[in-house]
Image 1 (cartoon, each protein chain N blue to C red):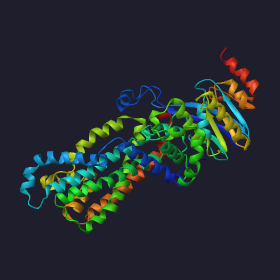
Image 2 (image 1 turned 90 degrees about the vertical axis):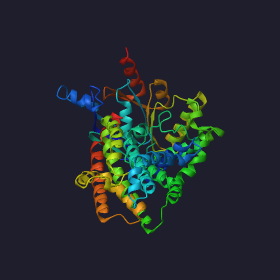
Image 3 (image 1 turned 90 degrees about the horizontal axis):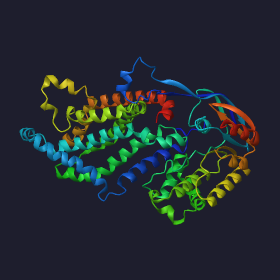
Image 4 (image 1 turned 60 degrees about the vertical axis):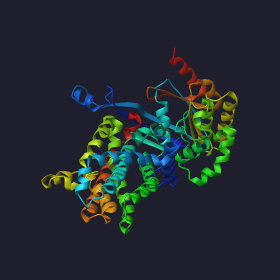
Length: 259
Length: 240
């Protein structure tokens, strides 16, 4: 058939163009541009600092601002990009119905736009990080494989939810309701030591724990992510992309009549 | 060449309008949830290279679905579609245009979505701008365009790659008379180069002017396939 698939020469250009379009539109009429993506985590940091100041003072080892801020930045990246991948099929419904581009381009483009956005926000992010006492060291290079593995996980999960969302729009509503709960269920702005030892296994059932804990290890502890984290993240990513892609391929024939 | 053999296209549609899990659960067992609805049933059609075929039919008869199937956007549920050649997309009015971006940026975007590489886009860009007659307006944000300007932009993008198979879904009836004539002339040019054209229109006059052969689609089936005059008569009788 004449479908423009992953193997076609123009596929990458199509995905890139969609991603760039998303970014251009997002910052078109804003004066502060990318700095907006820092304002939300900074505001949150102030609130959380007040709430968790007790913990912050008690634990000498903990640089709370550094710990919470790095967690918040990456949590925002993860939660926002899952939603963008999830809604990508419906957002591009018109294009999906009139251009013979393989629809897998839409989640890929949404993910790519989220990665570009994250990389751009690194500029203000690192300035603030140094300000709150971040020591630059070699562990920072692990951020590159980290972003790749995390993006694979997000794309898989988002594609799975996004495919189901074409048939049941509840998925999107359900997800936007659940995500704030996950914010508190994941040790993003509080250390896991705050949880009594006998309940910690519960936290470890949460897949997001491993992605955020790795970030704390890189930015706060200044070490490479632990072997446990790496193994779990890899397993989760492979499982997510495998299941997400399989479900998408199975159900994509019905997209045109349901969008 | 385009050849459809025994093509069925069916959609699973939610006949009772379920769009939420709550409705779905409440009505579980009362109705079957997804109904299989045939949009096209047992369609056989062969269009030779260089032919121009008009598709006529009532609203909802399956014409647009047939075009989507031809362009590869929908896969047939059953049967086989064979087609050789580069297909131009079915760009309806304003489809895929990003209103916040400029005309030029939209040309780049849509060409990319059609599978062109950035080199090809760069080469085609001046031709597209010239054909659209937008002049300085290509640098404006598309949200400031009039309806006619938007459709001129869409049409210019769709047609410029010199497609071998051109599928037209009622897009010619937009723009002023001058631009309509120009579009028809361009379609004629593309046909002269040996392209195959499938043309959906409710205007019998347009079909008569462009095509030598017409196909009447009714309730998902090909009711008649013949000369434009023959099909036109049956088509008009459908409404009497």
